[in-house]
Image (cartoon, rainbow, N blue to C red; front, side, top):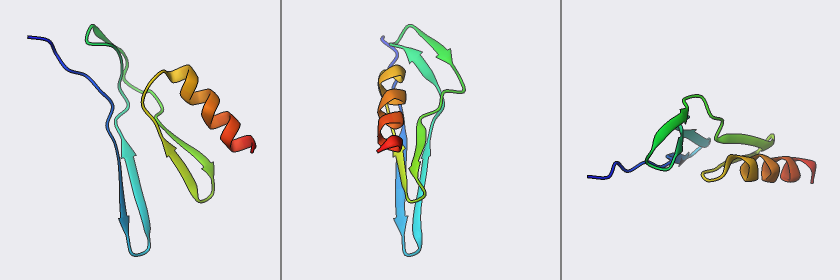
Length: 69
């Protein structure tokens, strides 16, 4: 049986704001856990937070570009 892995990012909107959370684990497919403290939430501005899943280098570059804009 193949072990399924994946990222969890959840955001909950309420009257006075939003709560966003994610897991921190990075895996190499179903083979192994590579890091248990990977950053998956990025503050773009004071009012924008990006939650992401996928290739870490691409996510970091996107966050950098968005923050600069």
